[in-house]
Amino acid sequence: MKSSFRTIGIVAATLVTFGAWAQAQPGRPAAQATGQGPPGRPAPPALGDGPWDLRTETGMVHVSVLTKDLQSPWGLVFLPDGDMLVTERPGRLRVIRDGKLDPTPIEGLPDLVSTGISGLFGIALHPDFARNRLIYLAYPKPQPDDRDVLTLAVARARWDGGASLADLKDIFVAKDWYGTAMSRENNRCCGQGPASGSFGARIEFDRENRLYITSGDRNWGEKAQDPQSHLGKILRLNDDGSVPNDNPFARTRGYLPEIYTLGHRNQTGLRFDPATGELWSTEFGPAGGDELNRIEAGKNYGWLLITHGNHYNNEPKKLGSGGVEGYVDPVIWWPRGGNPGNLVVYRGELFPAWQGNVIIATMSNPALKPGLVRAVIGANGALEHEERMLTEIGTRMRDVVEAPDGRLFVLTEASAFSSPGAILVVEPGAQPAAPQR
Image (tube, rainbow, N blue to C red; front, side, top):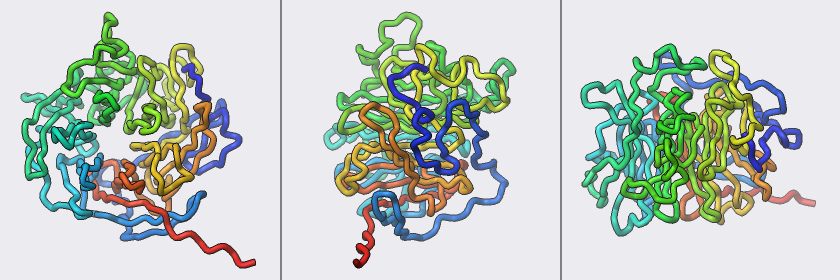
């Protein structure tokens, strides 16, 4: 995967090692990813009540709990008046009004299937939401005659602040319909699991009202390199679902015109840098090999041919771990499954030392110390330093959002399956007094 960026392995010797998210060394094999087990295992520890005053490399932070009454929260957006909308994976859309969770979910959502690890996913406001009141939701759409067979869809609706959505309409439906039974065919490589997960399903608008969608491979990695499949891609649409004329493959024979990039596995994070307009994405590898990528139009990010992780059945990698002409290497990769969630490029004023840093929510299990990762990216596009923060709280962190005032709002979940969740608020803490001389 050729790139102008250096991978984390090149600079690892100069960095601090952080346990399960230890940086890769050249030639070092990836370790087996460790995640939450299936239902029936002992429940993970409950989130404490807080607040927490925690030390970071740049000073103290104060972390408080806004609400603990959510179920598997997945995405959060701020409304123009400072209120928030939150998606819950079981299929609910919630409102935070004046800092309090409205007990009644918003009605009028699309028909979807929640399997425990899939359900209502990403949410985005139209850039002109204050005028047109349009919101966008990513979700797994079932076939009418077989609810086991799903595909990724994005719906648009109008919300006036009341009890229900209006004018609901799908603006995108992926062409790839798969169910658990269909995904157990024997012609797939690498020990891939059922198609109930790996949807990707983050959505984000750019400055020109173009909508970007992460579409995971649904555990069908061969599709990530297939130009006639929406799986394993980042897609780019106009706000009405039509295809922009300047999409990189809009006029390329044999390619679906919605494709913006290809060669992805399960992109659980997507965010623009508000200062530069650069697009960043986090991505799950298989057994290890999770990634942070800078997204560029028309590029191929390598999966399933190239991975820094190991295939679950130890099948050999087709083209190795990187450095292959025509494929983009990640800016950062981790040899063990830190399980990255969403990210934000921090541009607020409350944490001056974090300006321009990439803050990544992580979802590893409690033994691997989930929290936030602060990545300092240098002017040459390579990682300069990495810090893990908030690990003392001991819970999975799914999404991180920068509020208009510069605070960070973090969505947490107890496990990868349907589980209690919360919103944490991160702000500067009281700094220790200077020692007396």
